[in-house]
Length: 160
Image (cartoon, rainbow, N blue to C red; front, side, top):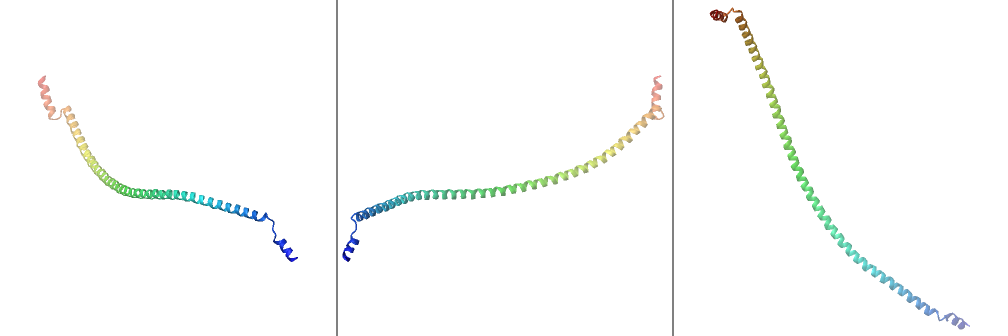
């Protein structure tokens, strides 16, 4: 009986072997498909990686050129600022010199105006004195009390 029980246990149905073989073949084909898909994805990613690498290299070159241009622009701006500072200093110096000259000129003009005012006062006094003398001489000439009056009388008398 022992043998019979062993034969019963050892005897497997005939469909189990081919089913296991078919399932192993399906699993192997599935794994092969996964490997092929992974290989295709790796090849495509590799191509995209190369394209991305080329793009990054060109971007690095562009960034390097941009930084170089920015440095040159900064240096030129610094040079321009130095020139502007010098020019502004020169303008300020010219302004200070002009202001000093204008102030000196105004001081001289004030001095000359004071001299002119003194001269005007002197001339005015002289003209006033002369006008008074002329008026007095004319008055005395009209009255006839002076030398001119006598000469006039002589001339007028000679006419009569």
